[in-house]
Image 1 (cartoon, helix red, strand yellow):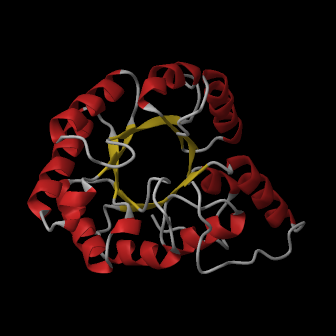
Image 2 (cartoon, rainbow, N blue to C red):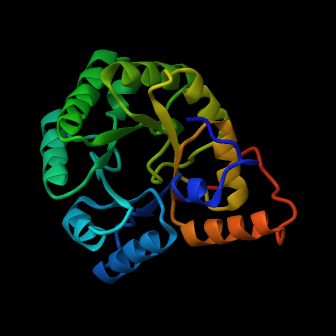
Length: 247
């Protein structure tokens, strides 16, 4: 699915957003408020901490907002068996999308088979539960060659998305990385941008570069600005070549 910033509708734009509720200090009250915000704006999903999956699924049971959670987050260092246990529990408690972090050190070490097999194990489990997987590469720590290799092996392993970042590394999504990732996965695999997409301009830039999902905390601001932009109240949306830091 290819989106275009000039023709995208409000509904389509909202459905590119995974509203992120992953800050370690997030309270239950803030989780509830975040789910209600996601429901109000009809975004694609809320991405919550594993501990909050059951509550988020309860809050959003009668909405069009999906529940997603993270696996091996934020550094990808858990053993494969641990990631499988984490994924299974999340699926049983109501998550329908998983954002898993690859083993970054193994990727950097050139151990492609290990990374492939781990991604495949999580994807196979998720797909058996009619759920989908976004695989986080954490591009800040990879060379372009490693990003390309990771995209190819994630495609082969059955990933539904490849994703730029967790939000906890030094840098996040860039249009250049999105284009690189889009060019190195097949049509079946989508691309998600995360970390630093905090403005409408940044979101539209990512969409034109090839994403179908955006991890964001500034959801309300971006959607309200989108409405103003389409209504002509914002006459110009400036785009930058790099996103700002921060999830």
